[in-house]
Length: 321
Image 1 (cartoon, rainbow, N blue to C red):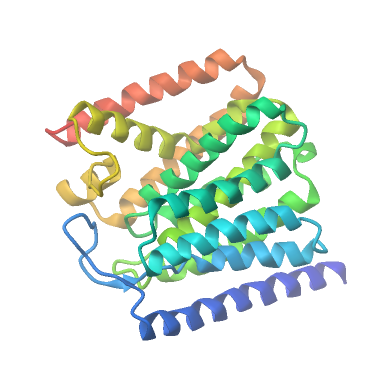
Image 2: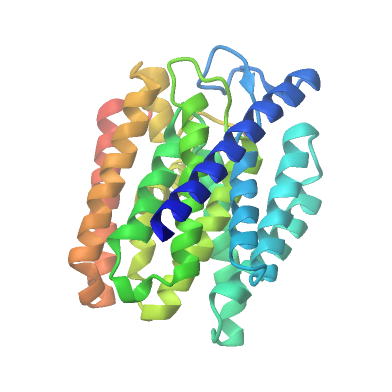
């Protein structure tokens, strides 16, 4: 009986998320919340922006299912989602966006990293904000945000030792996966109907940051950051390369490896998205099977080796590095 109730509850949640997505599409079309291609885009046909709004809906469903016990976490996710959605609709001043995003991040860090020494709060919040913006920068081709998020969530839910995964954290992974599956129905296509938008990519990043910090605090092992290695390498590597060219890193660009593969090498978006997800899945297997038992130095060594491989691939696929 309990199994049937659980299935019914998840089915109802998935249906609610699907209906919400479809309703949002109608609203977005009416108010022209559309991502129109420009010189920096990797797509050619306009698509609805902000389809990832259902990631916030999933987080709020989780909040309700846990008996409204995670108010600060829900508030933090809501803050970063709302400010990101507003930025999707109208361009906001960067300082206001950053202030609200940092405030929401502080709430997530405080609830996920209970017991963290006070002097660690500032650097952890800076790194968490960087992760969220990296997710946002990487949301540029069909399927990449959904596939990458799904790989990470599946790893956090079923790949880690059972004693690490509390009931509430498992529930957040599961309901977030439902939202990701619904989103991919409309995004993982040859011609995407919608993109995640800032609201989707930043909110999903916030969920993953909260989960990762919770697991890092439980194990006192920062090696779980490897579950974000592929995005991290591409984001940091691209920034360093653009700095070496004396480019303005705050301006829109098409310099990420995934953009080079799609725009210069003309690989299909979905193929590149799957490759990114598959490579991260392999890294996750290594992290679970090996790095959780190894010294921190080996994690650093593995990251450096991966970075060298990344730079070599960039050099092979683009004459511009």
